[in-house]
Image (tube, rainbow, N blue to C red; front, top):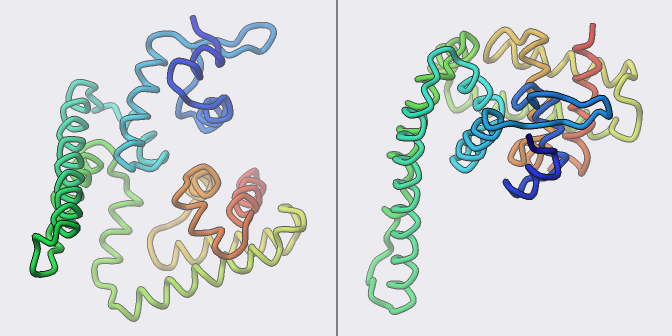
Amino acid sequence: MMTVKDVCNLARVTARTLHYYDEIGLLRPCSVTSANYRLYGNEELERLQQILFFRELDFSLDEIKRILDSPDFDRDEALRKQENLLVLKCKRLNNLIELIRDIRNKELNTMSFNQFDTSEIDQYAQEAKQRWGETNAHKESQKRSAGYTQQDWERINRGMVDCFAGFATLKDGSPDSPEAQQQVHKLRNLISENFYNCNKEILKSLGEMYSSDERFRKNIDESGEGTAEFASRAIAVYCKD
C-alpha cells in the first residue's frame, strides 16, 4: 500500500490533487487508516495512470470520470486509443517544429497553416468521448445547439460572460449570500435554456470543474482573479439542498 506522499513522489502529482480527486469521486483510496491516512493499491494507481493519460490528451475531469466509470470501459482499448491520440499529437508537434525551422531558414516562400490543423486529433478524441462518455445531457446539448446561428452563439456567450462578471462583483462576500445564490440560479437557468436541463447533479459537477480545471478557471478568472473559485463554492452551497 502507498500513502499520499508515496503516490505524489511516484506520479509527480500534488497531495491537493489527490485529495480533490477523492472529493469528487474520481480516484478514491482503497482504504483510510484510523489516523485518517489515505492508502492506495495497484488498482488505484492504474486508475490514476488512466486519469493522467486522459488529462495529457486534454479531457476534462468530468469527461474522465464518466469514461472510467462507464460499464463499457475497457482499459486495453483505452490504452490503444490513447496511444493513437498521442502519436497524432506528436506528429502534429513535429510538423510545427519543422515549419518553424523552415521559416527561420527562409525555406518557405508562402505562408503555411496546414500544420496547425487539429481536425484529425479532434475527431479521434470525440470518438473516444462518445464511445464511453456519452450522456443524455451531452446528446441534448448537441441536438439543441446544432441549429444555433452565429447570433445565437454571440448571445449565449454574452450571457455567460455577464453571468460570471456578476460572480466577480460578489467574490469578496460570502458564497452562501442571497445575491450569490441568485447568481447561481441565473447560471443554472442560462445553461438549461440554451443547452440541457441542468439539474443539481450536473451543476455540482460543473462547479467542481470551474475551480479544478485549469482551462475553465483561466477563462472564468478573466472576470477577476478568484471568480472561478468563488463561483464553485457558491454552486456547492446551492447544490446542498
